[in-house]
Image (cartoon, rainbow over all chains, first blue to last red; front, side, top):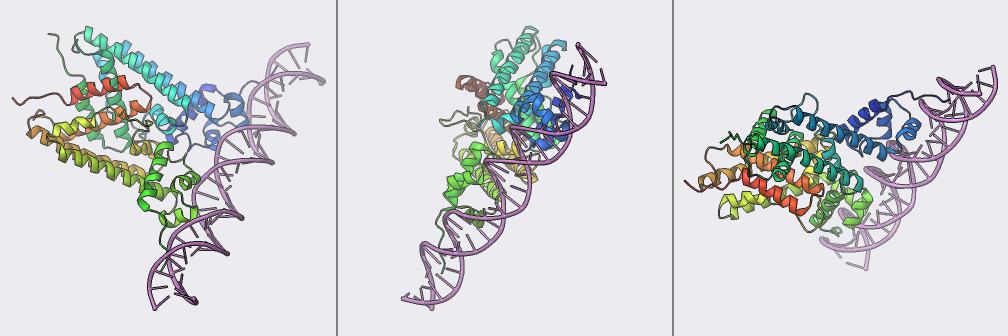
Length: 195
Length: 195
DNA sequence: CGAGTTCTTGACTGTCCGGTCCAGATTAAG
DNA sequence: CTTAATCTGGACCGGACAGTCAAGAACTCG
């Protein structure tokens, strides 16, 4: 009884997310969003609401995916410590260094946008909980000292990961980044053979 | 032979810096800058050039001050380790949590503004060198293991500091922030009594 | 006191942006 | 085929913004 949509919602959200990721929120115009999504203004507004709502949709999708990846890595790792080490792997991709969309957005908008700040807060609480579970498992598996506080260590790992991502954004060369990551991993996740 | 300036350049730059710090670059309008500086558009343009140049001036002043503080802390500390520990103190101020202006600016503009990115790169190279000096001194003073690479540890400390600042921006409560800072400091700057 | 130079103010401009809206296209149901 | 409902694209609008400019104010020097 009506014309069906001519686009795939997930594809559009992915394209939009990449645009926001590359350029930031303020520096992304509606024209940019139309270009990367292939949609007209009317369609975007009818389907997702205004720019801010569209951004939040893309951001929530991003953090959701990140958490899924983390959960999966922890579930698939033969030992939890392996998955924890991945968190501190040097963020050297092939593409441009655009950091973490959630971190970028928090720093750009956090002061003025309570929704983004709240989402950031919840996101990192969830991340902390996931990582803390991994830490606890690694402790049971004898790979981490049993006397450490899993949550404090999880937050330290998160902070270290964000710091690494940030250093990467500043253009630090790959070798230095790798050395830094190794240094952090070596001290936060020391080898600990069951004893 | 001419009318003297009716404003103090440093006061204006400080006010402008605070405005950019609170709201970010894009979210700061010329009207904001006029309000916080008390100057008219013409005066701002005549004295500092356009918005971008003014921003760079404020940013350079900020990083310069940061480095001065770091140098001073290292010079005044009876033991270098004391100054290094300060780097990882939980960033809980009395005012709003606005993080580090340099980090905020890098994440907001780094992708599109080579000048900012370059400045960030140089800034963190300088910070790394200053901290590495402190690490080397702490090693000589017997407060840190002598076999560690000062530069790698310096970068790890910087990354941890930035990570902490970021966690603070997300609204993490003071207790958790303090615990995280303690956890990071405890593992990156372990007690090491001369042996 | 007068003249010349710099500073200051705010009105003005052209551009761009987010958001609205409507007219036409496209589809399914009757 | 008609009809109704939805989708689509782009023209349009009001506002905000960065940047310009010119006229007047303020000060110093002679």
